[in-house]
Image (cartoon, rainbow, N blue to C red; front, side, top):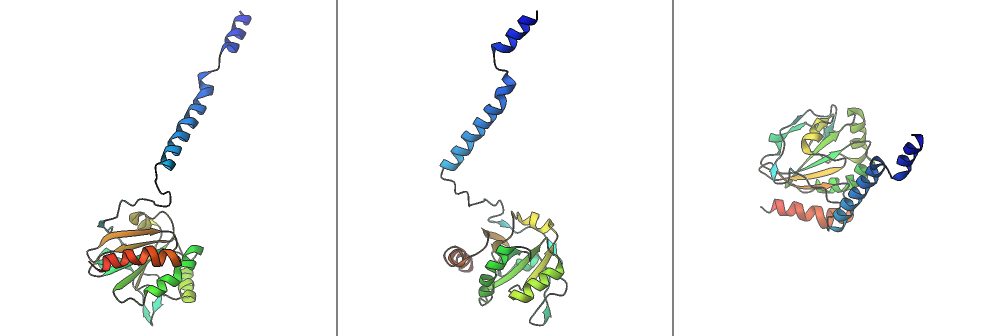
Length: 195
């Protein structure tokens, strides 16, 4: 009897042993197909493009001033009537620091309102960050995370262009740099401004 059991054990490979290999192989084929399909892995789709900005109402960052006046928070209605750039930033975000000079440059364009969504930060650190680098924002909303979820934020920084009707027209993921600001972001902004 025991020799029969030993023969059964020796006679084949258990199907459970092959299951992880089959799953791994299927995932490898799917990933290979996705990578070879021409999809740009740097482009993350946003379901909000050409849709109204979400309903939100963010309180201001306490103590934050610009030109001697308290900077207000913002809500969806504040994005109506003027082309807006909504930038998601945080003091703890090193890439936010790197892209900040391009937001400061954008303040020279009176056709654009710049709003900041201060993401998962503290008000003290946000004030210190903007005091050090300058405050490009006409409005800054303090967000503990819910606003970022509503906007479909993957991480910081992210920058949105919102048209006069309050529709999200473009989303730039990651930090702006000299090339992306000049060759990608500004042309997208000009398209929306010219409408």
